[in-house]
Image (cartoon, rainbow, N blue to C red; front, side, top):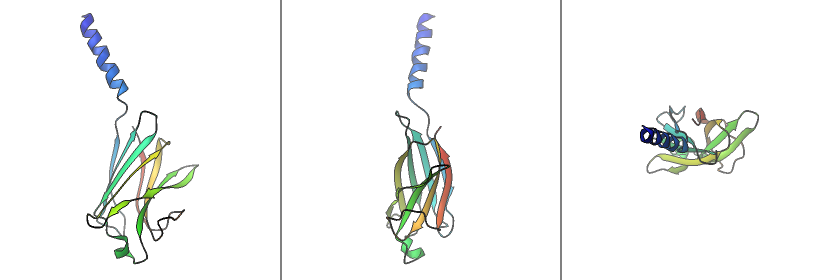
Length: 137
């Protein structure tokens, strides 16, 4: 019996040290990118930082939507902290896919993806194609 209890305790300690599960989200894009579908995964690393991985498939090239548009930009919005630019989707026109991995210290935040004409813009534009509140488990 003591051996069985020791094995059970060791198993529980191992599971506790592994960390939380990732939160996963799937969502469809808003106009003008009707066919686009996003997958977002948020996981907390060992230090407590949230790591968000985003993949968006079936994305039309920005210039096809409007010749002035050049990229898809990802933003993180936290109440009381404003909107912060997380980065630009690494977009493959051939694969019609964009990827981005970013970190955030906040346990819950809103992710926005916008179409932009300037990759170095400091504020999100009006063409929001994706919007989702995410959190890590």
